[in-house]
Picture 1: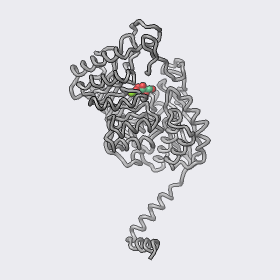
Picture 2: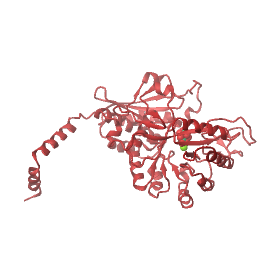
Picture 3: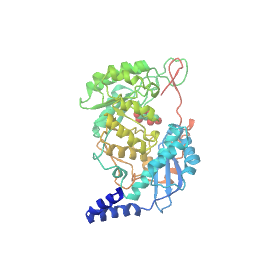
Length: 444
Ligand code: GCO
Ligand code: MG
């Protein structure tokens, strides 16, 4: 008896009801008409002053479309061009229901790859296709990925201030809202400190007139900030801090050891992507939990840190890695190696991107924490259906897809190039420069 006859026998032995169920399931999948990509466009909007490029994919089925976040705010105009000039002609006519296939085709179509502009363009397409899939299946995207492992995503807020007492007050405000985790950043008199939210008018001596930053001054002041936090705030409060790659590798190593006694929840971006080899030394010398990843664009960056367990939280900016499709793979790699997720969630991620973050938070066993940035009035005017914040937890929208509708008329009220108060922005969303006192430019 050959293999075919054997299989025939096995099928015949199946109870009739199984065969009927199989046929019904096959028909159901066949029954979902395969939508084709009819149009690809970019909604270029900056409701809060930060440029948020959103890709919209329209299919050939009436009323079936989706949105994806493509937010690289410092080079947003290039992302718009990458979508319009390269991905749009490449995608029109392709099936909209083969998400990873489309992802791989886009990723390889530029030959040179793993860069921020093209990754963000691909992310916009990828997330729009997941939105379409959810709308088609009449389910939120998290259901398509297997459903919830938790009701909502525990978040951390951004406490800041020019002086340490102001930061402590800012922490207390987050605790009053129910947050259990808070990132703390303090200003430095006369210097351009990261994340402190203020600008001090103290002038300090420098060989140039632009923004000044001295790493050693930042380190000393931040250690004092942690002393004060641990002295004045409840011991159960989870403290995060973002070094923002602003110190030298050896200073980062020393600082990671100095902060051990403060038992931080995580110590973020102590090193630059260019210095990832130093993470091995840091891991060998201290137990401070490390978070890294928002600057990553390539598997060459995140894979070694995860597979060698050199970090505790992977903090990729989802659209910089190319969207939901690659990031669910990053999350699974992290689960295998005991690394938790802490997706990048600043103001320069669109609400669509935050919906993708929450989706990954809900469906990943190794969820760590979610960065939270409040949605302003204007952002909500443009994006209807933002994830909801309650008591320090972010909740996914239960509607199909991302559950978000983009009000394109409102989006057009806030074109790229203008700040929150309508002032004309220079550098087209790019950042200026920060220099040490002697004029050496630093990573910021
Ligand atoms: C964070 C990040 C941001 C980035 C910003 C860059 O931890 O949220 O460091 O604050 O600086 O997203 O555009
Ligand atoms: Mg950061």
